Image (tube, rainbow, N blue to C red; front, side, top):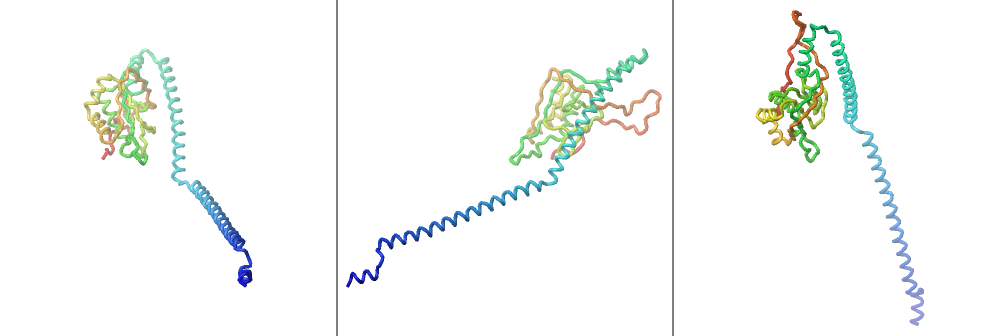
Length: 285
């Protein structure tokens, strides 16, 4: 009777029953795994689409200020190249004019021509060569954010340096190849420094022709020398002073008369005095 009762209550062998339960459990786990993999794939696709869309929006939405800055830089480069070409043409025409003057000048004009030739280097009309002093001003190293605000060389720094070199006995001065005359201007436009209305980039190389020892001594003892030391100590601006056995300074781009007149001629209308290199402007705080 017990055997019949077991057969009726348990028609399936316990081993087969356990195997059937394992197969059922394995099928449910595999389905869950397939569902998880599918969900992960969909999420990855959505994330990739979002990243691509964000990159496209960022590229298409570049600020107008950046585009304007690139256009302005291109215009500056084009105008600078055009100004350089005109300066070269001016130098060639000046040389041709001097050659023609020497041919047509009579004996009475020889003395005037000789005096003009003697004064030409001093007023920047001709290139000059000789020993002198080279002073280089460089911006301070950038901070962690990549900016150097107070450590930038500004127009006033160059103004004081140039005037200090003149006071020390310089016979001719040029900044990054721009010859300085009584009509020269050192100005700023935003963060750019302009010399003779030409934008320059740091480091700024100031060359002065004259006695190197006298120039160095006179500059060090002048207010300009104290100012340079303050730039180094307080703002980290690089200052390099080197004696040179030979410097070559080009002629000024334009040399014109604003006050000089032939003897007996009336003064030119609207003539104004020619200022020296301007040292006005706000100093460093």
